[in-house]
Image (cartoon, rainbow, N blue to C red; front, side, top):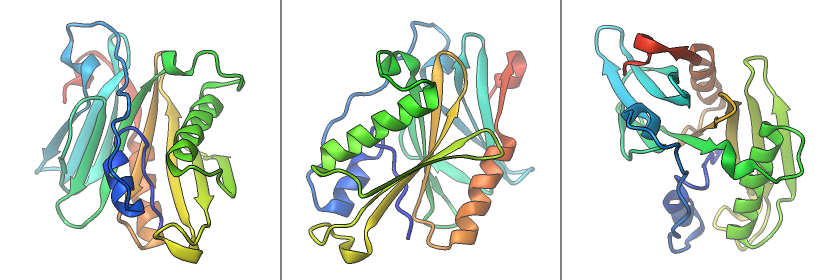
Length: 210
């Protein structure tokens, strides 16, 4: 199984996997704005199209939007949103990281800085470095970050535990992190990720209505 979790919005789930007490982690700071879109990720199911639309801030006066097949429901709100599929156990973490958090890191671009911060957070929580780390660019423009820990002290046992996040720079203000969990079939996992990434767009104005 692939365990794909975002550190800030899925710490409770990670704690369950590891048998740890959930820990409070700092939430993203959003720019000052009276526009609700700039403060949260919004989710709406379109029964006619058979798709769930996810919309969130990308930059001043613009947003990102993506679609998921079938119905998904929001379990948490804000800039870190967890969605649960109605038709299965699949869950999706949609997290927005302000680029202000990435300032001062030595890496040359937003993606590598975000990946470095993800790895730092996980290694701090697990108390040990990852044995394997990968950062791979995809044809969709996203970057797949993954890290693996192999340790018999972890509940995952000798087969190891892998965390994976797709990183998408949206603008100079925001980086989007997408993490899918509870999908045991590799082909289905990849199909869901492909559906999200091919539908992902940054848009402006009326198109940002959830």
